Amino acid sequence: MYNILTLNKIAAIGTNRLGANYTIGDDVQNPDAVLVRSASMHDMDMPESLLAIARAGAGTNNIPTDKCAEQGIVVFNTPGANANAVKELVIAGLFLASRDVIGGIDWAKGLKGKGDEVGKLVEKGKSQFVGPEILGKKLGVIGLGAIGILVANTAVSLGMDVYGYDPFLSVDAAWKLNKNIHHAASMDEIFKECDYITIHIPLNDKTKNTINADTIAMMKDGVRILNYSRAGLVDSAAMIEALENDKVAKYVTDFATDDILCVKNTVCLPHLGASTPESEDNCAVMAADQVKDYLENGNIINSVNFPNLSMPRSGDTRICVLHYNKPNVIAAITNTIAAQGANIENMESKSRGEYGYMVLDVTGSNAEAIKATDALEDVIRVRVIE
Image (tube, rainbow, N blue to C red):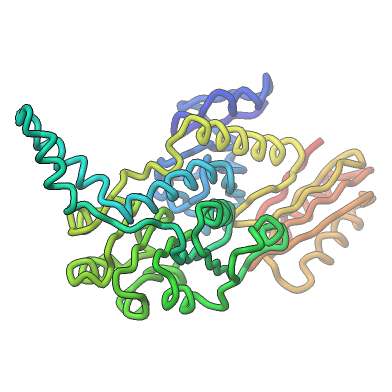
């Protein structure tokens, strides 16, 4: 039996996939895994039983991933599960950045009670909400992951001239890109060339304030900027100044913060990107499947703190070893297991930054092999799956 703690409501279409061997709830004790959406785990004491955390969404800012790695807790996310939902809202954002639809709606509401005058007042006042069409305009897409690719391809179909930038573009992602998308050699090219800019990269120490006073200075006057990724990717003070002096014509963001709310020419949405029933279902299914595969088979898919590794089962017992990525660790593990009389039938090893992961299928004596492996200096955690 496995215990699964839920820190938010997780769609039943996902949790139902775990099966009868799982106890699932928000009051589960000694959990083997946690399913979470937005709840913060930074102040949570991680129980010794905890093997995995699955975030039903792409961002993991609410999870202390480094701390989890040190404790041998694998953190998963669900990239791409909410991509279509976010893409649709980004496309809506392109129109909101162009045409003052929201301003016009709010103004029209103020005409209530004017009776027969409304028609004439509408015709007289509508010019203040004029905005450009997106057809033929240049759109720069920074980050060509699951969401960025969908945005870029859709914008091409809407008649935009699209520039894409991603120094880490995967081969699989490249195959999905529309052939008419220009490959930008740098972000600076996008900043200088594009009429619209949308950013789709993770927030970390290197990407914080990617859009700032210096990068805004490179942009065209009247540029329109969309941020559906994370608030911290944009320097709010620099953005406010650029909006006030009309360097930036419109800023559309899915992250309403106190400093940017009600600033001239901003559209602030309450983090609606993934707020669709389809997206929540997709994320729940992916998160549940990843947790199940890890608990039952030791396979890691879409981890943010350990390398991905999947291997078909063979042998009597599967030994899973989370370790530091240091010289001679792999040899030490295999030699230790073999020295205790266990025969390694099959194994795979992957590394990612400071951390590594090994899966070994063995036959023969393994109790002492597991104990000896766990005692190795650079081993973080050993799991046994029968």
